[in-house]
Image 1 (cartoon, rainbow, N blue to C red):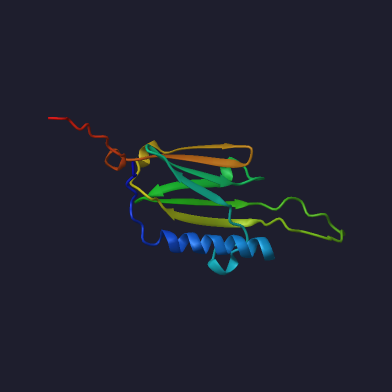
Image 2: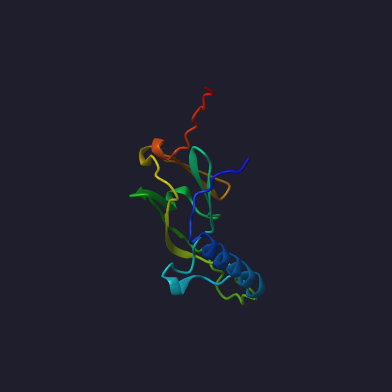
Length: 148
């Protein structure tokens, strides 16, 4: 049996871009997205889709849940917040400092219509999990076929 897959013409191009980013990040290390206007810190995000929900997982270690604002408007999910720098040791010579801090704002166009009033978010162990229930018209429908 063959599944019907929604045609997304730009998906292959975006997948190729993501793969190239992974290659360069692995080789050169990850660079802050300052040139993209995101500030020095931008949390990593995974977005997945099930039959009933769009699931978003955000890596935000070291942040308090009150420092992260989640909004959904016109099918766009926006994450906004600030990761504050911990105490800096005065008169210390740092040999390595890789952690990034600062304000961030990231927006994602959701892959399908969602019920904005039913969105839920849970923050635990540095991971923010957001569940965005799909609108009824966006959920797949199963139609029974009768034999005559």
